Amino acid sequence: MLPSTTAEPYRARIRLTLGSRLQALTRVDQRILVYAAAVACVPLAFIVYWPAVNAFFMSDDFLVLRAVRDRSTWDVIVRAFSFPEASQLNEATLSWRPLTDLYFYAMSPLGIHAQPYHVINIALHGVVAGLGMLLVRRLSGSDAAAVATGFIFVVAPTYDYTVGWVVEVSELTIAICILGALLSYHSYLTSRRHSWRDYVLTCLLVTIAVLSKESALLLTVLLPSLALWAIAEKLSVRTRQEIARSLALPLLALALYAAVNQIRDASQDDPTRSIDIHMIDNAWYYLRWLVLPNGQLGVAHAVLAISFLCAGAAALLMRRSTLTLLFCWTVVAFLPYTSIKLIELRYTYLAALPFVAFLACGCVEVVRHAPRKWQPFASALGACLVVAATVAGAIRSRDIQQSFAGEAAAYETAIDATRNLCGDLQADAYIYLINPPFFDAYGLNAPAALNLYYERVHAVAVPELPPLAAFIEDKCVIQYDATTQSYTRVG
Image (cartoon, rainbow, N blue to C red):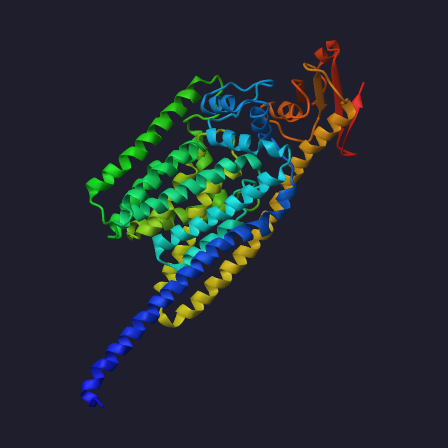
C-alpha cells in the first residue's frame, strides 16, 4: 500500500482526469441537445403552419405554374436563365430566379395541387430555423441563446405569409443558402481541417443563392463581416491575405449578378425597383414592424426601433463583436427590399432571424454580467420569456394564416365559378371577372390562373364591365356578389 504522501498525487491526477472527462461528456451532451433542438424546429414549423397545408395557390403562384406548363425541358431552362417578357398569353416569372422556375417544372407532374408545395415550404422553414440555431451557437458559444433563437424565429409572426405562400420557396431557399454559406465559411476561417471542402461548399452555396433570388446580395456584406468577426474574436486561423483571396471569387460573382440585375431593371419602362429617397422611409417602416409585429405602427413601434438602434450602437462601442455582427446583419437584411416601392411585410423574413438572435444573445450577456446571486433568477425569467414568446408567436402566426387562406380561397372560388358558369371556351375567348375579391396587382395572375384549365383565353379582373366588351362575341362575364360570396353569370 502506498504511503499517503505518495498516493495523494495519484488521487489528484485521477480526480483531474475524471473531471475533465465529465466536462467533455457534458459538452457532448449539450451539443447533442442543441442538434436535437435544431431538428425539432421542423415539426414545430408544421405545428404552427399546418392550417396552410390545405390552402390553394394564389397570386404569383399561377404565373410560375403556367410559365413551365406544356413546355419542353430545354425551353424551360432557356426561359429560366433568360429574361422573357411576361404577358397574358406568354406567362413568365417577373424576376430572374432560375431555380424557382426549375423547381416548379420538377413539381409539375404533381398537377395543380398545392399541398405538396406547402409541405416543402414548411419543412424548409424549419430547416432555416435549425441552421440559424447552429450558426448562433457558433457565434455566441451559448446553447441557451441558440435554442431561444431557433424556437422563437420558427413561430415569429414578423414575416407575414412568407412560409404559406408557395412562390416564396425562393425566399426560404435563399435563407438556407445564406446560413449554409456562413456556416461553411465559418469552418473555413476557424479550422484548417477540410479547408478546401468548406471553401468549395461556400462558393457552391453562393452560386445557388445567386440563382435563387436577388437577396443573395446580402452575402456581399455578411461574408466580409463574418471574417472581421473571426479576426476580432481571435478565432481565425487564416492570414488576412488568405481571407482576402477567399472572398474574391464569391464577391466577384455577386457583383456581376448585381450589375446584370441593375441593367435589366434600368431597361424596363416601369421598374419595380429604384434607388430613391423612398428607401429610407421603407427601411424605417420595416424596422418598426420588425421590433413589434402587431397592430398599426405607432409611438411604441418607434420607441422600440430607436431602442434597438441604440443597443446596436452600444454593442459596437463596447466592441461586442457577436452582437455587432447580428445588428449589422439585421439592418442590411431588408435593405435590398427597400428599393421596391411596394411595402410588403414578408420582406422582413431574412431580418427576423438575426434580430431574434441579437435579442437572445443580448439577454445572455446581461445574465452573465449580473450579480451571481441574481443569475439563477435571471436565467429562470429568461426561460419563461422564451416559452411565452414561442407560444404567443405561434398563436399570432396561426391567425395570420387565416388571412392568407382567405386570399387563396378567393382565387380557388373564382376558378371553380368560371369553370362551372362559363363551361368550355375556345381559344382567344374573353372572360370578365367583375369585382372579384382577390388582389391582382399587374393583371397577370387571373389569366394565368384560368389558363391552367383553359387554353389561351383572355381573362380580365375589372371593377365593372368595360363598354368595349359589348362588341366581343365570344366572351363570358361573371360577377361576384359580396353579400352571398358567390359568382353569377351576367348576360
